[in-house]
Length: 167
Ligand code: ADP
Image (cartoon, rainbow, N blue to C red; front, top):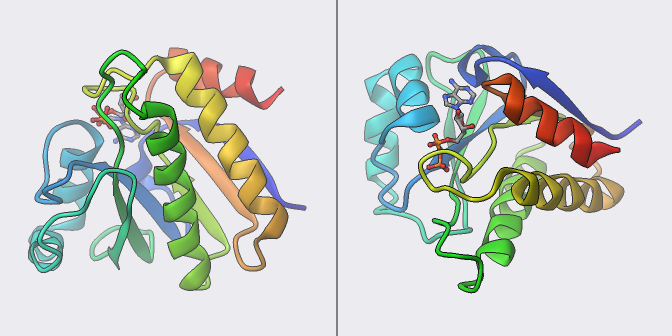
């Protein structure tokens, strides 16, 4: 059965077909989960990302997982929160949907997401969780390869927000 799950943990450690990186529009690495993924994947990831020449907010790009247990890394810049009247909700939904489309196109069955935009980008957590869960569930209804999507939350407050959004 297709479903969204929530776990607490480090996304660089999960064994899935694809993990998603909450990147920035340069795709050249940064802090937070982006920095952790680049450190764990190794320098070949940086070289692979350089070739894209950046990525607009809400779109996604795919690379190999290099030294990670995941086969692929899907990089998506989520929106920076500017108060909610700058298309933030739609852009966040686009990040989830476009990441899942790439996973589907690459035959992935299992996909793991971090909590996109709720760190340095300051998107309100409960609102982000609701958008994420809704967008993932909508996608799963029509997906043929993607079956299992896991939200990998780095702290208990974040995990609780996504668990609430699933109910
Ligand atoms: P953004 O710039 O999109 O807000 P951040 O990396 O600042 O991205 O934060 C997004 C979320 O990722 C936050 O909840 C942060 O705590 C979390 N995070 C940081 N490191 C990891 C990791 N190794 N695994 C999973 N989540 C992580």
